[in-house]
Image 1: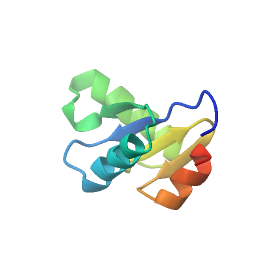
Image 2 (image 1 turned 60 degrees about the vertical axis):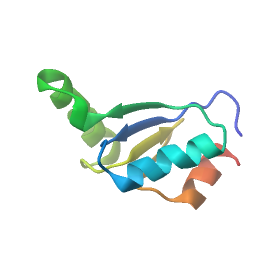
Image 3 (image 1 turned 135 degrees about the vertical axis):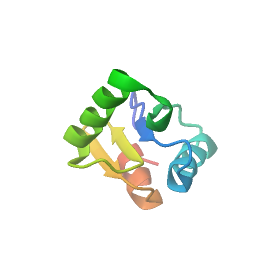
Length: 85
């Protein structure tokens, strides 16, 4: 794995692809930060949705940020490449 890369995930608690992404990272021993956007309220939710839109060009989940790379959706091959595993 590339050093000092801690993925940040924007997810929904009910999204199967979001859960698959978290499971994949856990299975590979990769620590990550995440926000379940659907569990936020009010202004905080609006701010995070705006952040997701600016990062990915839309509001889609999961949105995964790994260093300067952004991956939208659960794609093992893209995750492996971005993480260097």
